[in-house]
Structure formats: structure tokens, C-alpha cells
Image (cartoon, rainbow, N blue to C red; front, side, top):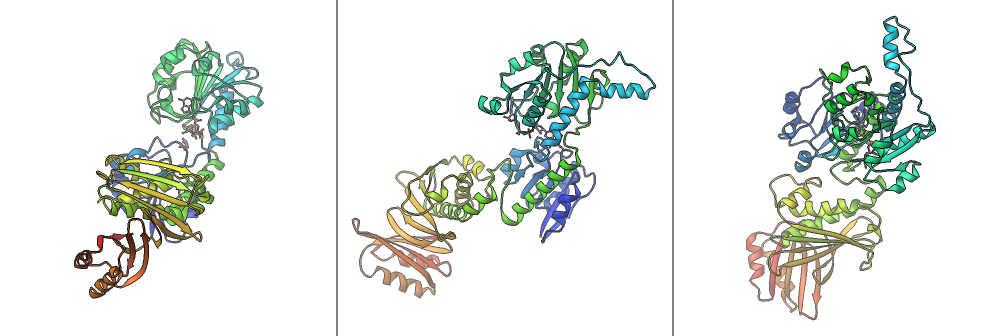
Length: 528
Ligand code: NAD
Ligand code: MLT
């Protein structure tokens, strides 16, 4: 039974999906505080929040059962993503699901700001008729500067162009080509500030974007500029904005988001040239339905099928890629597990992906799977695909992964080389047969076709008669049944290798007895 805790409410559409899912129990208590969430969280597999709840490292500290945190919305700045990743907890959001709502809200704010709609409404409520006071500005032929040309910024751009505005965009993470395609002029931040009559912000809140609008950048704006923020509060230094609004240098601002929400006591609230909404960007019926359905299905897909979508701390896979990669994820994990037992300690891992099956698919999840397989049996803490890389770094194990179109003839193959101290090195290649069976096809220079599962003995021996008989009779003497056996030899070195799958683990004495024969070079027991 999977237990899901929903903290900030969720539209009925997604709730229905969760409640009707088999083996899933949903709790949606109202108004839980941080301490209360922390106290109950150890009993849950998944947590779903919107923007009210801040998920801190402290809150998830004791939540050993928690596998995933879902954000029904875009911004994950209310979730400690790093702490979640380190604890192996997946964090996912619903990008784009509320983009239209946020973009339309931005346009509504821009129009309302240009024509003083909230102030005029307020004035009329007070019985006044102040036609002269509310002289506005048209948007036609005015310049709009968009900071952040992502999903929302692009929708705003398209609609602003329809209003016949000139549109400038600044986004250092996309090239000028993307801006050209969107029909906007690609400029640097300074040029955008200097050339815009309206500026609208559409970036995430990050170390790079915090207080992007500050005293310095405001000093670079055109006199009489109007600023709209429907992205994140921390993007604007509110104190600095207040000063520029007070002096009239900034003609007006439209704010949906605030450094502190609600912005109790903020001097901006008293300024006549600022209009506000209480973080309503995503508050459309359609957006709430979209994010609710999206997060509910993503959480279920992850809990029930291991399918990862829209994760912010793990590479996402489309359903198509996931189906293609599924057997390879298992293969990768088993190869990692094998190497963790052959090469001790592992100081470096080199992974190569080959064959047509693994071309044009994201291989990062495969790499994480190798690492998970390697570390899982070694570490006491829970290792999963999300924290695997963090733990690898902590152990100073070097990792390189590359892809090649070349293969030994398999449609897809993964080669994992583990390097240990001195000359210790093991190279294992695995492939997928018939789209589902995973096999070890070579170990060092030996060509094999061994199933990668269960308890196996890996025995290296001199290629001389009598060795296999010794292995069989020794295991028999200890009542250990052989399930399967694969042999390979190197004529040049006059050596051979045997991979023997056992029905149960062989006791230490049996391994010693195997090693006692003069033809045996090494015996290792690995559990896959
Ligand atoms: P997105 O990831 O699609 O786009 C963000 C864009 O910002 C990207 O193109 C990125 O390259 C760009 N960017 C990053 N750093 C930048 C920088 N220093 N300068 C310029 N550009 C930079 O995100 P989105 O879905 O468009 O969301 C944008 C923002 O809107 C986010 O902060 C999100 O949380 C917020 N949001 C708010 C509401 C609301 O209710 N008010 C609703 C939805 C989204
Ligand atoms: C978001 O990032 O999705 C928005 O801020 C909307 C919300 O939090 O409700």
C-alpha cells in the first residue's frame, strides 16, 4: 500500500485519479504546519505540495519511507531539492501545466497597469468619477522587455506581438536563434533595461536571478518604465523598487509574487502606482485541473511503475524511451552490482553504451543505475537512482560515461570497466536478448552468455582437464546445486573462466575447498 500526503489541497480531478488507484491511500488534512508535517511524514511514500508548504531538510530528515515529493506547479523553490536528492527522494513538478494561466495573468496585469484598472475601480467604489486622474498608456508600439524566454515568457511574447508591441527578450540560457523563432529581438539585460517601456520577469528564482531587479539594474532602466512580476518574489529587491517608484523613475509595477508571502507590512502595499494580486498567476480553473492531473499521474507512474517524469533532480524519460530502456536499466544495475563485488575498492568507473538500441535515448538514467548497483550492496544507507551520483562523489569514485555507435553485434550493450588500486581492472559487457533477457556477454577477455541473476560463482582456472569435475563434485559435497553453467576459455593464455549459477549461496568452506585445487586461480561468489 502506497500512502500519499497532500498538504496544500489539490484540484478534485487529480484527487480522483489518486483515490481510484489500486493500492494507494490518500490523506489531505487541512492546514498542517511544518512541525505537524514533519511528525507524520515518516508514514508516507509521497508528499504533494503547492506553494504554501515549504519542504525543508529538517522536515524530511526522519522520513525514511518517503520516495517522492510532487510539486503541483512550476517553481520548486519551496522545496529543498538538494537535501531531497541526497536522501534519495525524487522531486518532480508539473512544468508548463499552468504556463498559459501565468502568461494570461501577466498580460492582464500589464493591461491593468497601463490603464489603472484597479485604481479606477477603487475610486468608483468610493463614489468618485476621476476621468483625468487615470490617464493611461497604450501598449501599441510600446516596447516590452521579457526577462526569461521559457514556457511562460514565450507565450507572453507571442501575445504581446499580437498586440503590436515591439518585444525584446533576454535569456542567457537560450541562443538568439530561439528568440528569432519566437519573433522577438534577442538582447542583453542592459539593452533590455534601457530599451523597454514595460519589463516582465519570467525566470526561476535562483542564486543567479535573486534580486535581478535591484538598485543598479533599476538605474539602467528607461524613465517611466513599468515592471511586472508574475514569476517569483525574490527576483525583485522590493526596497529598491519602492525607492524608484516613490521617485517616479519607475512609473508603476504590477506584482503577483512577493519576497515574503503574504507581504504583510510591505511599504509597496501603500503605493498608489503599484497593483497587486495574491500569487494568482496559476489560479485558473484549467491550470489547477492541469497541474492536479499531471502531478497525480506522475506520482502514480513513479510509485507503481518506476517511471520518472518531470523530475528536477533526476533525468526524466518519455514513456517511449522508458519502455526502450527498461531492460537496460536492469542490465546497468546488475553490471554495477557485479563490478562492486569483483573490484574492491572501485576507484574509477568507465561506462560505454553501444548499439542502435542505445542511440538517441538518454543514457543518464543508465549511468545512475550502474552506480546504484555498485553502491547499494556496499553502503548502509538507502541507495537509489536519485542519490547514487551524490554518494559516488562523496566516495571520490571517478566516473566517465560515453556512447558509441560501435557494438559487438548486439543491438544494445553496456560495458562497465571498474578500476581499483594498482593494476586491478575488470571489464564486463552486458547485452539484452529478445528485448528482455539480460546477459553478461563478456568478462575481461572471455566471451560468455551468462544470465545476470541470482548467486553466481566466478571461477578462473587453468584450462586443464579435471577442473570442472572438481568444481561439480565439491559443490555436490556441500549440497549446493548448480542451476546453470557457462564456460569460456582463452587459448592464448591457457586459462578458462566458469560462471556457475547456484540454487543457493555456497558456504565459505565450499569456496575454500574449490580454491584448494591446483588448477583453480580464483573463486568469487557474487550476488546479483
Ligand atoms: P521555464 O523554465 O520554462 O523558463 C524560465 C526561463 O528563464 C528559461 O528559458 C531560462 O533559460 C531563463 N533564465 C534562467 N536564468 C535567467 C537569467 N539569469 N536571465 C534571463 N533568463 C533566465 O519556466 P516557466 O514555466 O516559464 O516559469 C517561469 C517562472 O514563472 C518561474 O519562476 C515559475 O516558478 C513562475 N511561475 C509563477 C506562477 C505564478 O503563479 N505566479 C505560475 C507559474 C510559474
Ligand atoms: C508555480 O510555480 O507553479 C506557481 O507559483 C503557482 C503556484 O504555486 O500555485
